[in-house]
Amino acid sequence: SQTIHQWPATLVQPVGSPLSLECTVEGTSNPNLYWYRQAAGRGLQLLFYSVGIGQISSEVPQNLSASRPQDRQFILSSKKLLLSDSGFYLCAWSVQGGFETQYFGPGTRLLVL
Amino acid sequence: DQQVKQNSPSLSVQEGRISILNCDYTNSMFDYFLWYKKYPAEGPTFLISISSIKDKNEDGRFTVFLNKSAKHLSLHIVPSQPGDSAVYFCAALSGGSNYKLTFGKGTLLTVNP
Image (cartoon, rainbow over all chains, first blue to last red; front, side):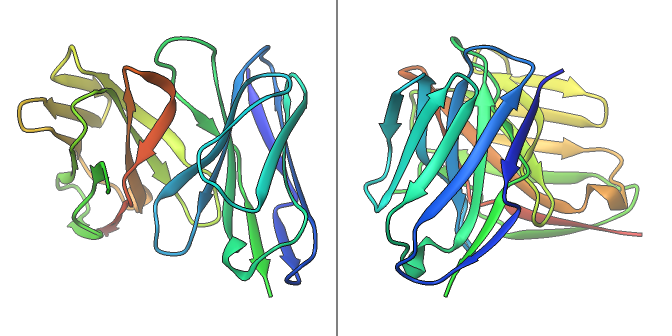
């Protein structure tokens, strides 16, 4: 069966510090991978998606970036965090092609102070 | 512009009764719809989906109804249980993109014993 991991679970960072969140998927090959953010009182917003190694599409312009160095690894980064980057970050995966359900990881709660 | 709307931020139901969660959408290109359930500090869990070629899909206690002419879908939970208490998100995919899930803001369901 497939599983998706995210770490860390919780992170408190000062404004201006860098960020690196990691997501890995097990039990599947060549998945689509996604980064979402849920800000307080809001729904889920798609930040990035990837259909393959090194292929990243950005949905929302911001100071965040994503990378996919390996087939089942997806990384969310920032060089300098802003207060507005606080939120709950979720990684998700789906099978390639067609209308496929996205399955979410446990999430990372980020608090920028 | 919010393309997927869940107009009720919260819903309270008695255990054993029916819970009806509603979702409206504006983009006529949406043709695949999903419901997710989310507990605090956890990732969303997929519940049930429906393709636009159907008007009903049932899985155990969960039934999703789709009214394409009204651009409306609903999730019925019968009978409701206290463990169903969570935030429920409606999400949609468009035919032009099998990657981008558009989420509503969610409805908090509370099932009272």
